[in-house]
Amino acid sequence: MSFVLKTNQAAYLLDPNNDSLVLKRKGKWSSVFLGYRVEDKLPVVIKKLHNPNETQTQLRFQREALMGFNFDGVQHTLDAWKDDSGYYIIKEFIDGLSLRQLLQKDIKNRAEFSIKCVLATLDILEKIHSSGIVHADIRPDNILILVNKRGNPDLLNPSIRIIDFGLSVNMAEPIVTQRLPFSLLYSPPEQLLNLPELINPSTDLFSLGLTLYESVAKYPPFFNENPEMIMHMQLNTAVAEHRNIHPLLLAFIRKASFKKQLRLPPSKLTMDEIRQTVFEGQQDRFTDCNQMRTILQEVVPNISETEKKSFFRKIFN
Image (cartoon, rainbow, N blue to C red):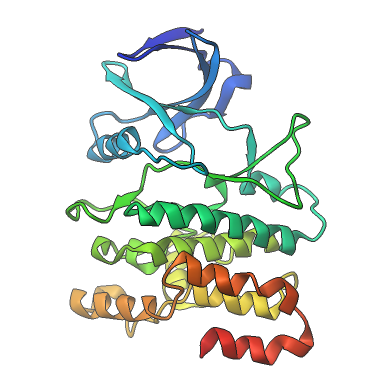
């Protein structure tokens, strides 16, 4: 049954019971629907946040409602509203497919395509970081590739949009005291171990490295039925070799997602030692988008046996 959501700015029509208009039904934190602005029939995306009385819901609402960028490459927030029925975020509609959805498609030269997507993502992330924001939730679901009228992406020159700033961190704001949520399969140690003071641009680059791995391999680098085992692997092991990932590209991903192994399980260490270990690991990652992009741009022409040794030296010296 459709209904009209009225805010101080506009009215929006949505139909939560129409499956063809549902982008995400009852996720952990939200449900997402297609709708349109009544005034001019502009297609929009409407996110309804669950659990309105929880602090995390209120924080997510504040992050996305106030998030505004004056450049392309991100999904812009158009409106926000809260009433007795819940919290709503109204965003621009982007006609695209996520990297997650493209895992199911047969793409020729998948590694080259994935690298192009990551390079385009880095261009956008650089602007986001320059604004003092860390996205803090980079993963295949939150990177969209625009499609044409036939629903197909441009595989040679993919155009990228980054979406979902619900977990974003403003580096200029005071550090929150609550436990920050994170995406288990893609988060670096500073997120897994709740060290918000260590969240910085390398946090996004870590997650982007794991996203690149999954985009090429078609499954995540760390996966297990037991969430505790996933966390153990992400804290202590490097990404594994894969037959579809060239050794040079693997070396690049390992640097992006580098972490220093903890001496003991976290429960047996002081917070000072944990913090120091995580900090030292961050120093061996790519520190900013430009550094990561410069190396990645050389991956494709250097994926050959003859260039392997010199390229390894360039990455790690």
